[in-house]
Image (cartoon, rainbow, N blue to C red; front, side, top):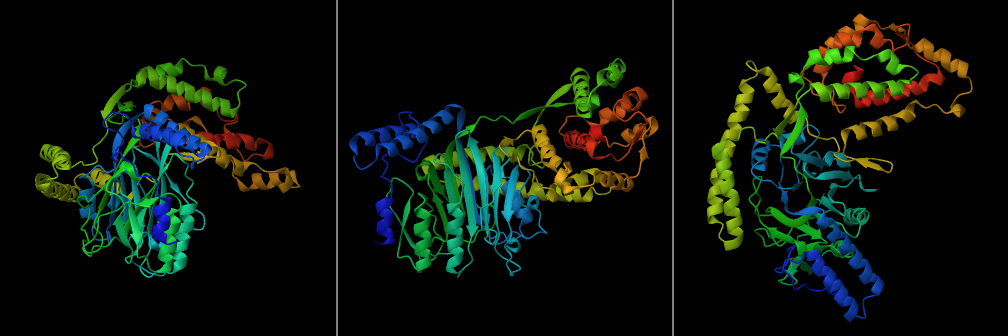
Length: 588
């Protein structure tokens, strides 16, 4: 059987609904699918009842997730940028023009000397793989990148036996029942068949569930495939005239997983080099968007995928914080003076003392530190009212062009918006550069935004536990590192020798009221609060109270010194790690 006929035979039934999440009657897209699945169970004898029941359960899960979330239109922007090294200012400025949920790039040509934040602002979590990481001997070219909006929870997925491939795989959590897996790859021209087979094997190991959406995209450099539209009602394209043989094997292996090619944006040669495969082809609109970087129309026009997903309700427009610089520290010191720490710490373990101390500090903060609500800082600090006006017009004209089909007004407004944004951004960069002498702190903050990207995972997994809460993540790290301090009896035979060696390797040091007071005063009040929520300015303003003997001697040994301990006391040293991880300011 030919590949074309095989695809036709396995292709799902044509849908009579438009590829939108809601029909004209108001019925949700998945509810419509459920009704059709039940109908097919009664009419088709070729489909097993168990298969239909599984399909119905999958759809029911999505309907349940919909009831707990909000329908949101999400854009996935894709472009083969043919190098970003010399386009940092242009690409960064253009990336602020749009609010794409996800940005996917191939042929970035980046290496370890380039920071992701030079090209994409910190409102995105960036996952990338440069060519040098694959062990390639080539010094330039290649590289892939996925940037996911920080409003979405995302994690990097490392696939087995794929370290030599130019790929990135990211899991994006949409709601309680639904994830999106995005796999982007770049395959150089004239690659050997085993490269295609390795990418196919990597795709087979994507840890998705039946509910999840899978999107496989990238530049696969298969120019000899002719793609034809299968049906006007949906986006799927069917391959014909496939050569060479390894290309046919690759396409057949991909589609065997239930994903189908939907990109119809052809280049100047009427070819499709950038391919997009997905299993959610009824719920996506494919279009050619304004480019974020200079486009290569000859080979690689940009692609925009618009999905409608039910995303967990998140409101990040305003956040509530404690204003430690406006706190009443006179009242707070009186509050600490009235507490009998000796009594509170009596007969308590070190871990319990730390918990009590945190409870006391949190009570003091809640009573004497006011709260303030502030808006999330704009990702465009150079924005003014005129630019915002252009942006509003741009969004209105874009929506109007989708209805009328005429995008001339949109392109005119977009051109004005782009020119003004570029001008303001360049002026902003020049201002930051010239402020090195007059306002050095402002200059270095700007430099740090370019050097430091948000590489911390929003979702952290440890064993069977997953959390996005910073305090819970600190506890997970403490639990993980605790194992490094536990010594198994079988590892050592002479406990006395261990104690002797330990005591000889660590010098005894003294602690007194003045040294503690001095260290607290050295804290940098310009730093923010850690995950424990304790600001260094609080510790500085209460340093005298914290360093007093009756407070300090309950935390430290009675002789005012700390020495290396034997194996029996290692537990307490492990417990202090939890405090170090959760409260760096307090430990200091």
